[in-house]
Length: 200
Image (tube, rainbow, N blue to C red):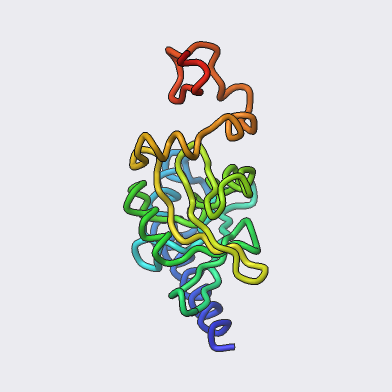
């Protein structure tokens, strides 16, 4: 119950901040150029990340009817694993604070971390069950564990940090069979990965 009140309070604070920033920059100006809109959206996304944290869903747009926004903090739960942040796209998925911090450091993402994590995880979920405790996407590897009916993502290791042995372990033929055709190259010269049978 306390967590729900904290969520509602943070949501209201962020929404009020967004409205105030819009009024401060544009007032009642009915004609706002595309360039100013794009600049405002980029600046506000960065400011919200700095002011309210990297676990905030922040979608801002301008329509025919004016300024619209969808702003929400992630649902957070305190556990013996630390704080768990619920995914915006995958209701059964929770990220540890360690995972969010590592992802932010390794990808230099300072805002909307969970949105970016969710986009990577959408691909990685396709590899669920191939490697026990790990899911793989083109950008890197997620370590996870199952707890009751929840999938808890413990950390993220981006591709550049993987050793040759880990690359061989995680990126085998099973992974590539799940990729779209446009990701697979005909020749090894244009490839980031080379399957072992192509080396022979």
